[in-house]
Image (cartoon, rainbow, N blue to C red):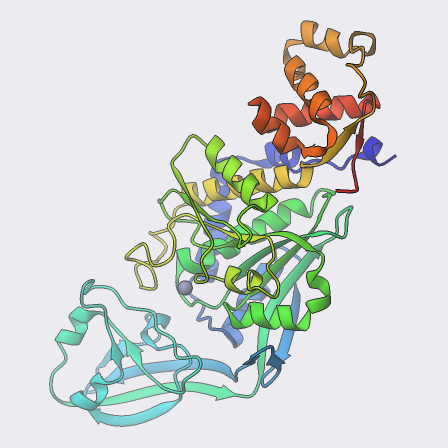
Length: 447
Ligand code: ZN
């Protein structure tokens, strides 16, 4: 019988292994390792990143050739960069890619020439309102070149001749992404997706990657109910490519989360799926509500991260986006200030634990059928009443037992019962497990 061999739950594993401090440190260490790499939507930076992730989880690396048609898009040429600088006429390097990979506009064409200050300025990007920070700029779909620098440094530029050098290549190659499928009891899948295309930026990019890796690590150690598919992909073109090349698999995706910006000190924000009333929407809302910290739930809008593609009308997947401070809402966004100080272990640990709680509920949020629906079963003769009276720490709550029996009519999930009764999900789940042991419940697989 299926109910007799329920899988280990995520939470029990979590409780065994989780020490917020330890997990926070581990997440932060992985971010530190990935931080120096110059990533873009294609190229060796993504490969190097995925290679490091492979030390943690058995990622499958996919290479999609340049020119591949993916719905209305075409996989672009592959971009790589070795070196870049701006030199003064004295030979002094004033902007050096070796100091920060944000100094070069991502996808810059190779160039080596001398320019006047006026000519150079047309290729420079700064943030006047935050004069110490270097902006992050890209030019994926328009061939161009450029440098990013602090506005402070920009104002110091003298009218003289400059040598600009970008040792990059933009050639036919591949779009690289990583994928890891953890098979569960069901072929129905939970999708966890994050982008791997930003260079040295911690919150927007690395926090989501680190949390996804550690979620995968934890889930791979248990026997989950659902199958879990993890995607480490370049933003936009990566999710479009995956959806276009794996359309037959999409039908299995029943729930999902895009993870991003999960390491800053802001409160958690959940952006609902386009459906707005998907199970994942209810579950994440419940977890945040129970957290006793401020949080924000926002409705879907067609901008942001890869939820834009997963929630496009032709797919309309139940995929939401979990973050702390939403993109563009914090001044450090897409600047050199989104660095190793901006993300901190305790915020990463908090985000990780919220993700685990949400996935635990999702994996256990079943619908049961009361096998003795005509009047209450006699609990005392099964030891279920005695347990309530005598064993203080048994965790068995009489009201939880009664609510589960009453609402297990084939229509209510355990979360529905927890919400209606005001009893915690854990207690409701514990009561359901005891009732299953006594054959008073049966899983309803038809929902
Ligand atoms: Zn971004």
